Structure formats: C-alpha cells, structure tokens
Image (cartoon, rainbow, N blue to C red; front, side, top):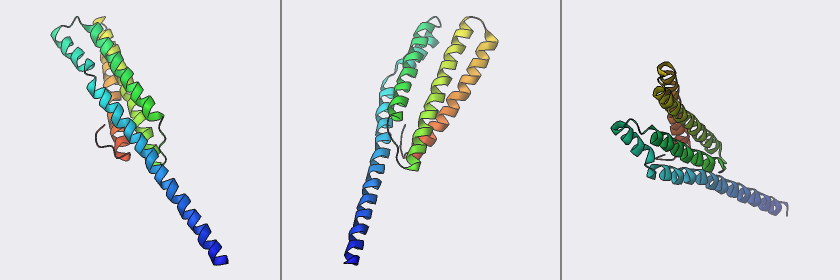
Amino acid sequence: MRRWRLVVVAACIVAGCLSLVSSAVASDASVRSAIKQSAQQVKESGELKDALKELREDPKSLEKVHKAIAKFTGALRKVADTVSAQEGSTPEGKQGKTDYVGGLHKFITGFNDVDKAITDAKNHEKAAAKAELKKGATLVAAGVVEIKKGAQLLHVKSA
C-alpha cells in the first residue's frame, strides 16, 4: 500500500514538473512571437528610410526627418511594450527579454539624440550637434549589441 502511494505521489510530481516545463516553453515562445511580429511591423514601416532619402535630396526637409524619427521611435516603443508585457519563464528567457527590451530603449534614446543633433546642426550649433551625434551613435550601437544578445538568448533568428 505504501509503495502505491509513493508511485501516485511520484506521478503527480512528474506531471506537475512537465506542466511547468511546457508553460515555461510557452512563455518564452510568447516573447519570441512578440519580437518577431513587432519586428516585422517595424520593417514594413519604411518612413524613416524615405525621410533620410529625401534629406539627401532636399536638406530643407528636416521636418519630415523629425516626424519620421518620431514615428520610428514610437514604433520601437510599441515593440518594447509588447515584449515587456510577455513573461519569460526560464532564466534564459527572462534574461533574453531584459536584454532585448533594454537594447531597444538604448536604441530609441540614441535615435532621439541623433534627432537632437540634427536640430543643433540646423541651428548652427556645431559643437553641440557633434556631441549629440556621438552620444546617439554610441547608444544605437550599444542597443544593437544588447538586442542581438537578447535575441540570441531567446533563440530568435532575425530581430
């Protein structure tokens, strides 16, 4: 009789562990799915690319570039919010999510600094523009590294 109880208790423990593992995989999968869907939306929005092309052709179109950067960073904020709302349940998934969202925030801040640099350059504040541009470029590069690290931990192939 005791052995039977031990077998039942062991079976319950195994079943409980299996359900935790499957929910952990599902939670990490939801983070991956959120990243993939959000990244696709950002890729499909070509406004920043178009605005930068116009800037090369017509330097007086800075307002379009400012608007495009605002839309682009807004889209990235939505990605960060979407990914943040998901629960990574494995340690690797939680760290990947943290790295990915942190990288996005650095990337966004870097783009905002680049936007400020453009404004400074327009206002003939060369030293301030150069400092903002350098700061922005550094943040964008650091953000990209962190995003890639998070994507790698989450096993996201393209982000």
